[in-house]
Image (cartoon, rainbow over all chains, first blue to last red; front, side):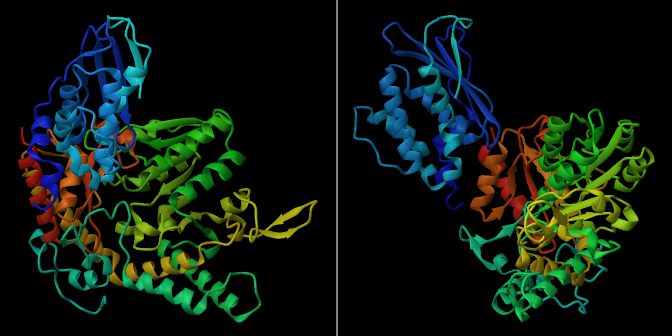
Length: 160
Length: 427
């Protein structure tokens, strides 16, 4: 197959078949939904931030295409242990990667960026950008919610 | 170039049966320049004709010739070119009249497409003649363009929108439709063929039933004219709309047919040049049909191109095209059904050459992406028919649709690519 192996490399196929952290988190502190209007795909992202503002746990729910699922799965692998600022910085680097934009300077998260690099061929498929960034936008919307409660009922629900 | 005198059978696809009707698909393909360009390093397999048909050189050339040799604005100048352009525009209207078997050319209004035709009827007919509580009946198969204008009318006039239910095969059964008809039904508006599933609706019986309760009927022929043609007098529909670009014609041109008495009674849709008889600041007198509904400089070259497309399809022979496409549909249905993870959505007894399908564990966008890498163009999405998707519990489908230039060989390419998708994403 010409080309298609670039868009769906082994890592992407593997994450789409067996997504990591596809679950809800009942003790979430932050949550938000994102919808891709082009295809109707929807994803919900759940976060647990500790008292120091460090991401302790992250998970997602929803049925979507292989790209969106793999991207959400990869995101949940690289975010734990990061601060809000680091999560935003990772998004900026990932966004630059999949859109072919200017890469921000290195910031000590090279291993995470390399892992996200499984989706780098997306820069040649601009119509799929929203698939790749769907979960990330939901994650950012969740972080931008005021934060606070530690139970599901107290969590801040946002829509990306 | 297409030669209608030939009696050459198609090399493949003949196994699907009806090859007695002579149809030379290779000669047809030679007329479509775009089919000969590679895509992603492979021959293009274009299976998205239901979204928009490719154009034969005869249509492309008609527009080029018109702009090169005959172009000016219409109904304006007394000079030679303006008269020629006006004659050609009127001739295109008469071609549409003959194609639809309308009584008079005045019943043919050129629009930008089917969408504008429906909006014209919803606005002009709807706002003038429908009152609060009056009912508009559509079906669950409609394209968004035959839903949203009626929702707008509902907001403006307080009409009631009723939607006939589908069955599990993706058909709009007659009894579900007639059950919604009543003394308050003023208009029924429905597709002849579903764009998302290909289902053919029982339009003749639906029109008769609607007329029996005194309702007017609008037929959305966007998907049907190219496969089945249309005879508006035999159908006895009150309005009929279609788009030129789905008929191998140009974009930006479409047709609204309306019965003359209705069009006469309806107020203008837009105001401007060409639609007036006289204007003073105190009073404007509206022009006679069809100019009344064609404000502003119309899509003249596109109308000429549409005329060429109708000529092309007529020469190819609608019945022969229908048989060819029906053969492709049967062949593709049988081959795709044999792929384990494939489920076909929409299994109506009578279908136009459209196959919507989903694959277990694979999102339609991923199907479309892998097929694209093989040079195969299909539609993946909701097909501007989200209620149909909701009815079948899917966010989207993959849809392959066939036109007169498609071949059994291309169906084979489709199926092979679908098998690749299955292997790639199998869990």
